[in-house]
Image (cartoon, rainbow, N blue to C red; front, side, top):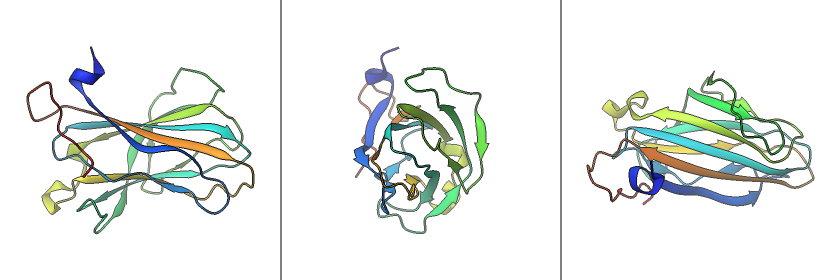
Length: 160
């Protein structure tokens, strides 16, 4: 399988320092043309802080009527490891990342059918709270969208 032909890959947050009082908010993206999103949240350098990861659905690319949703996630909290845990269920309150390990990642799984599409919720955003650390904590977010409804090899954009 070639991801570039079967899926749509979108960088939602370029690597950024989230320490201090910033946290992060990814780009908001649309699930309108896709059945599933696999979202990778990477933590590079970790100066000693944990961030709470949440996923919000909304009605527009501007985040209208945003509300946090439950989701599935796997974690790889061994520095530079590559084996995900069994998927766990996060409530709408999200989950906390490891407080000190560097070079780790999390995989968030969201099906479009789990969104409240009957009420026009087709947009998603990943957020991370202020980790409360004074040393750098680098994070990035990338989405791999699958199950395109366009039927071709060219995948429709998900970020407006």
